[in-house]
Amino acid sequence: MSSDKTLEFMGIAMKYFPEAKAKLEASGIPVTMDMAEPFMDLFKKVMQEAYDLGKQDAQN
Image 1 (cartoon, rainbow, N blue to C red):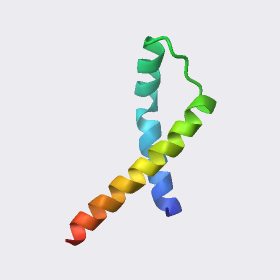
Image 2: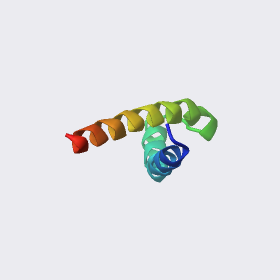
Image 3: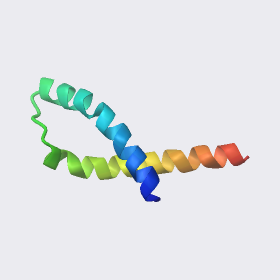
């Protein structure tokens, strides 16, 4: 994955992180950035796959 896309994906994640954090904490699950890191890695994988799929669709 290119570092440019990684930065873009992380920007998207950080945009929605406060909303996700609030929803988890409202359910009684405290969230810290250290706890979120493994999920950020998963998010990057999902975003890369979605990006690749969109790119492939655009080429067809």
